[in-house]
Length: 310
Ligand code: NDP
Image 1 (cartoon, rainbow, N blue to C red):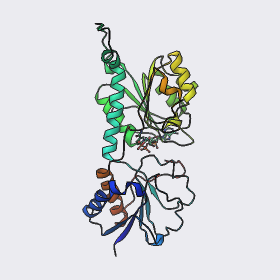
Image 2: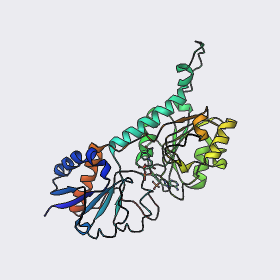
Image 3: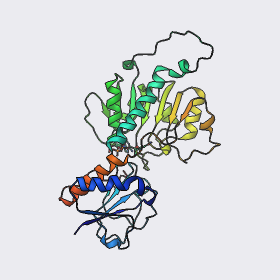
Image 4: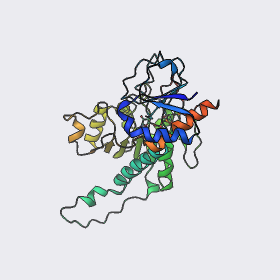
């Protein structure tokens, strides 16, 4: 009897179906991938993304796991009908992509590239950027993505301090926790990267008080989630020069409304939530492997902790 895998985000079917079928086969699974679920009680696994119309998980009585195509699960984790285990996406290609975004945007600011790219007066101004070792970085969030980005920046010579909920041991990266740890990480950070999930605990984490803890002129990179930063406090800090530049990929409202002051601010760079997308080829392998583990009685990987919200 094949296992039934319901692919809920119908709009992504064409992009994912061939890779998902191939990955299920490669994992040695006798699986039937289905776009429709006329009998929810017969579904063993659900592949989910926020674009899916599926909201009521109650009829899926046999479902052993809901497997998210997204790393961030804030749009499903609070669904009271979802009693099945929920796994988030940890996709090696997405991680690589996030590392490229963070390193690229950090290097742009570190090297002062804009002054050389936009130099209409052809001014010869030989000011060398500091060495990476002179540019401390705070990585807020040391999960799958934060750890990979912190490790890549460390390899380039930047002294990175990590910050997360629980203790972490990452070679070459001191990792701090709690309010004191955050204050310590921010006090020296010339670049702050936020790779935190959106939860009640991270809402407005970078507010006026915490932005004031940064050395003057520090750079903020936010590829995590928009609500982690208090927008008004960030604009005020940019206006005074307390924050030298903010490169933002995520926003409270997306697409970012045309009249939002971020668009017109000279010290803000906006990328349209493209820092790291889930990639079908790798993501399907991750999902198929998790189903294989579950069918073999092994624990699911990347399980979401409902109480913590990520
Ligand atoms: P993980 O769940 O692996 O890591 C989250 C990290 O945040 C963990 O280190 C966790 O600490 C820490 N954390 C959570 N809450 C707090 C808190 N209140 N205080 C301190 N630390 C906290 O997630 P990922 O690394 O995979 O992804 C991070 C986020 O990146 C996603 O939730 C998503 O919002 C965003 N994202 C953005 C994308 C984009 O294109 N812009 C693409 C993909 C993801 P601990 O380790 O102790 O639990």
